[in-house]
Amino acid sequence: MTATGLKITDDAVQSTNEWVNDVNEKVGWEHKHRAYRLLRSVLHAVRDHLNPDEAAQLAAQMPVLIRGVFYDGWNPSKTPLKIRARDEFIARVQEDFGSDPLGDAPEAISAVMAVLEARISKGEMEDVRSTFTTEIRTLF
Picture 1 (cartoon, helix red, strand yellow):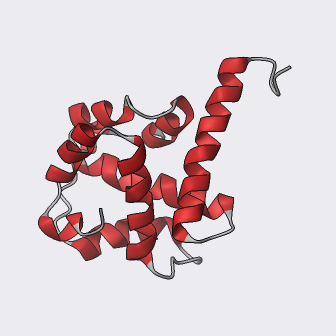
Picture 2 (cartoon, one colour):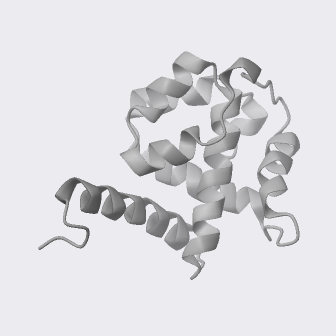
């Protein structure tokens, strides 16, 4: 018997938990909700930097619920944002943490990028990485 009564839904929840758990582990936290917020924030910062076609190609390789998180609140007519400086990218992620700022933001962002590198094809990640400046790529 499945938890929800629908195997596809159970599989979607499981794969989402795997991504969140990977982020939680890589950043060294024991706080799944915070790890989810970090994953969401970095995905949005990456998404908003990409042109709509590249964003869609990246999202196509994500599990369905992670894909939903990726697209949540997206306005493709306002993208791509051209973030050129590493500090600007970090600040974009930090915005989502308001009164609960990330301690070592570059390390936390790198943890999410490591999860993406592990779960998205090498070719797609090379395409994504190539859209960023050399300075921002140090976070990958």
